[in-house]
Image (cartoon, rainbow, N blue to C red; front, top):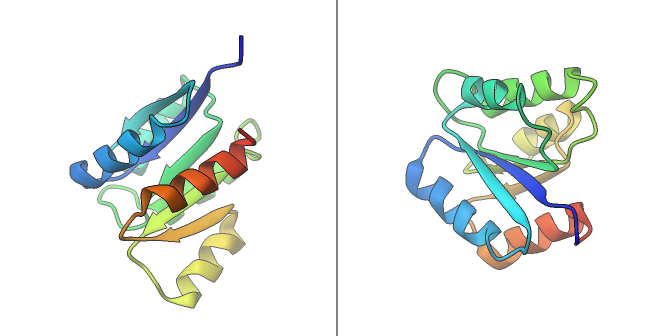
Length: 125
């Protein structure tokens, strides 16, 4: 039996988060855990070791860039792939996210085939 995989989806917009989770269900054995913002994500990360994190940038309480910094500073999470999914199209935003440790950067609107290709590639499934 293959190892179950876990994705942490961090997105404040419930509809967008649901679309991401529905898309991820197309990957057999991948469980999605949801968080509304960075603080909630950090709380969930105390109890799980995800195989991949997908996060928005613009969120209340704690944004995705701050979450990215916290995750990369945590030795046990430092190598977890992080996909930024955002409306921020500027090259400077992408460069900043990559410099902070993002593995990939996808702009909205989300296209399920593109998202799934990226996640499968990063998870090697």
